Image (tube, helix red, strand yellow):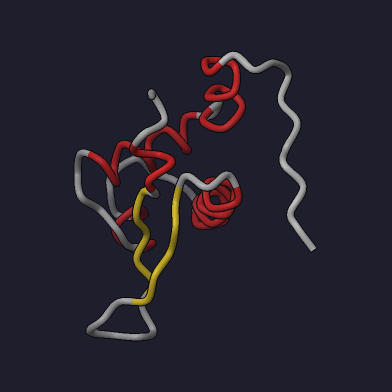
Length: 94
């Protein structure tokens, strides 16, 4: 069964981006992935922003559901999950 595409208020890229990144935590997670090269849940928690673990987990799930973030197992430790920006996130502005 195919996933239903989320409905947006309009087709405007700015409006859609605000729906996905509309809170400070999501923006900070994307910033940390892009600029600070942070990739693990622990690194995000220790970034100095003071994000609660339940909020971090929720925002990572939402960003993953939106196709902005993907998770993958760490090659050195399969128990560890790393996050990365997807191609969709990297080409959002196009």
